[in-house]
Each structure stands twice: as structure tokens, then as C-alpha cells.
Length: 263
Ligand code: BJW
Ligand code: ZN
Image (cartoon, rainbow, N blue to C red; front, side):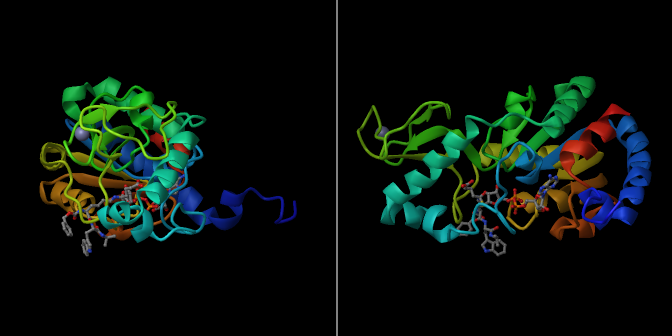
């Protein structure tokens, strides 16, 4: 067969592919013995659902300066531009479904019980809950909620609902904003505190599909490590978190997680 026809994974990563099977075999018994499993996910876990990641080629921010759309200053300067960006993202969710990676994490929680499992996500797409996961901590907010910039009221507005170009609050008529954590904004304190507690309680901590460059989310990895967790990374390639990682499973999470969790 010519190299043009060889499947991408086999052509680009023949050695890594063999190592992947061995690494999964190593990770499975560790996961089976775990008493408490914490998971940190990022945009990569939703890539196979057709949702763009943030960084790198084809990333959401390749054609868009982050400071033009994902900061409070940007919203003050041009709320119409920011809402156009978020309304496009809400619209793209209408055709997105959870993929086998989301489903595998749901099965892991179902097997352990929600009191022995926490799914901490940086994603705002709602796909973990759509897959059935229950103990989900959304660090960076949700595309399915809006918040009044004046009175702070938060409303659930699912992505299949059209919003006007500049939506307004029913209570005080001021401008609504996406209930998303932008750069330089604090994470919701209760969510962050619970996430840090769960990381510290984990004896296995999975880091899935995140570049681990955004703080404070990335701090959860050393928090779990310092508390004695085995750190397992699932990603296409090593990341900033890899320094802390005990077992690296380098392949698409929609393929790796079902194997890891089925066994
Ligand atoms: C696959 C795959 C497949 C692909 N299978 N894998 C200097 C040092 C430390 C911190 C700072 C600093 N300067 C500024 C800060 C603070 C800042 C920060 O961290 N900046 C860094 C970028 C330097 N953090 C903040 O501002 C936070 N707040 C805060 O710190 O408050 C205190 C404060 C107050 C006042 C002043 C300063 C600080 C808030 C952070 C909020 C981040 N929000 C965003 C945008 C939300 C809006 C939106 O969604 O539109 O959240 S940023 C963006 O990045 C988004 C994501 O949740 C987040 C993480 O990205 P993620 O998920 O890791 O995606 P990618 O694209 O980076 O990576 C994808 C990965 O998947 C890759 O590794 C691929 O290989 C992999 N992949 N396909 C498996 N199939
Ligand atoms: Zn209001």
C-alpha cells in the first residue's frame, strides 16, 4: 500500500501506537483499584464531536484575537462582536453530540458511583452532561447560560434557542452576557473549591484533551499529584501537564477512553 493510503495514525505514529496499547494495559489495573477518580477535561475531548479546540492549527482562536472576544474589556468595547462570536458557538452546538470519549467517562462514573468520581471540565459545551455524567464541575461556565452584567441574574438559555444580537435582562433591562469565565475573571469560587478538593482526594487523576496552559485549571494536576494521585494523561501529544504525568496515553480520546474504561 502506498504511504498516501496508510491510515494517519499508523503512518505518523507507528511506535507510539504500540506503546499506547502497552500503556493502556498498565493503566487499566490502576484505574480498577482506584477508590476516587478525578478527571480534568479540555477542548480536545470534544474535538471528535466536531467542536474546534482553542489553540493550534484549526483552533477557534486562529482567526480571532482572544482579547477581542474573551475578555471583559472586549465586551465593554464591542458587545455586538462578542455576542456574534458566542451566538455562532451556540449555533454550532445544535449539531454536536457527545462522542465515545464522553460516553466512556459517563460509564466510569456509573461504575464507581458519583461519590467516588468528579468530572472537572474547562469546556463550556455541555456535552459531558448530555452524555449522562452527573458530578460535573464546569470551571469556565456554560454556553447554555446568560448572566446580567448589572443585576447578576443567571438564566438557562439552551443553545437551541435563538438569542437576539444584544440580549437584555428581563428583570432590569441591562445587557446580558454569556455566563462564561473570560480571561482575568475569577472562576466561580464554590466550583473551584470543590474541584481542588476533588483533585486532592483522587488516587487516580485523568487529564484529558487539554493543553494545560490556562490557570488556575492547570494547577489541579500538581494538586492531585502532591496528594499522591497517579496522573494519567490522554491527549494527541504531550502537553504542559506531562511533567506531572505517570502514564501518557497518546491518541484521540474518543478511541483511548473507551479502551481504558471498557477493560
Ligand atoms: C485532543 C484531541 C483529541 C485535540 N483527543 N486530545 C501567567 C501565568 C499564569 C497565569 C496567567 C498568566 N497570565 C495571565 C494568567 C491568568 C490566565 C491564564 O491562565 N492565562 C494563560 C493563557 C497564560 N487565567 C485567567 O485569566 C483565569 N482567571 C484568573 O486567573 O483569575 C485571576 C486573575 C484576576 C485578574 C487578573 C489576572 C488573573 C480565567 C481563565 C478563563 C479561561 N477561559 C477560556 C475562554 C472561555 C471563553 C470561551 O470558551 O469562549 O476557556 S480560555 C480557553 O482555554 C477556554 C478553555 O476552557 C481554556 C483551556 O483550553 P483547552 O481546553 O486546554 O484547549 P486547547 O485548545 O488549549 O487544547 C486542546 C488540547 O486538546 C490540545 O492539547 C490538543 O493536543 C488536544 N486534542 N484533539 C485528545 N481528539
Ligand atoms: Zn438584570
